[in-house]
Image (cartoon, rainbow, N blue to C red; front, top):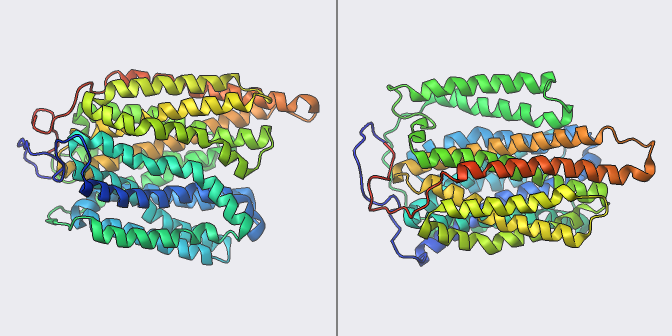
Length: 495
């Protein structure tokens, strides 16, 4: 970046063309990104299945074991803000190789852990690598394909987001059943090795000019700020209230640090802030940030409810719960490539509107949930939600990145990943508290009606989720409704 506001009409994606199809070079690059994404996202869902096993293995409480997830999340939140600067400073290929290697090393160390404290520490190492993979993947693919094909490459990037929730619980349950918990981490080693070789061979050589200074003040404000805030938010389910000191103290400290980062980043003398908040001058990116915030809160927050319903109300195993969630992923796999293609041709606005409306219908079906709702009904609702998800999430991402210049794509990708991570964490905490409060009055005094009351409690929380998803229609109305052309310098922004 430079301080100049000079217009550059060259396409942001140096390797892209204006053709409709993704050429072989872009597809090879996409394969690298998908492999790394699958490794990191699959690991999150695989490990969630092993929490009860960790309790038995390390003789720990559920709150103590939860640190294996919390530590990963905090490391992820701390490293994401650095990714945009590091990509510009050292090059995306070098940084991607480092991220994959760090994740694989962390996985090997996790498998060798002989105490819970060691496991949590090594999960932090995993998180440092995993936190860089998705924003780097978005940057690499957007630059490779160019703005006119960003919808399609975002659809490709959505593949690991689909496969992780579908196959993660299934794979985790299967590995624990036939082997030991160590294998939920060891499985990452061959994937990581393949990803390293593949990335080394396929990703284009970095050509960087390391001229930007490092924003030390920014990193000291934003990284710990996000980590503190997310720690406070992630403590809400454990405490059952937002007013506990364990929630309020770190959350307030985090908010103060993040708030202090804003004027620092906007200072005229701060030419290269850690996260360039001037990107919000881009109307499309600003609208996409609002849409992504609401979407991530509602969709990812509600995703917590499905396995809990299957296990607590219907008595299903973790493995069977994972299988029952597959229709949602299948639905998204159908619409995601179609939505990506259409977003490039007619703009993401109409596509996202349709997707959000479809998700609202599917989520609305869960407001009628009971303890004995037929599985046919549940599977149909999940499939409908999946159809909507495939036409919503990645087109929102695409609308944010399509009008950014090449040198601002890394910062834009980082910004969108921060928004998604924070909003998803808030949504998860929100729906966890709503569900806990809904279930706390159900006692053993009416044993015959407990399951029915639990079903009603889940339905009430799904109503909140459906309303929140429906609110996403408001920012979706403002998303671009025409194709972005790289040749049009009036829409390309970034300084």
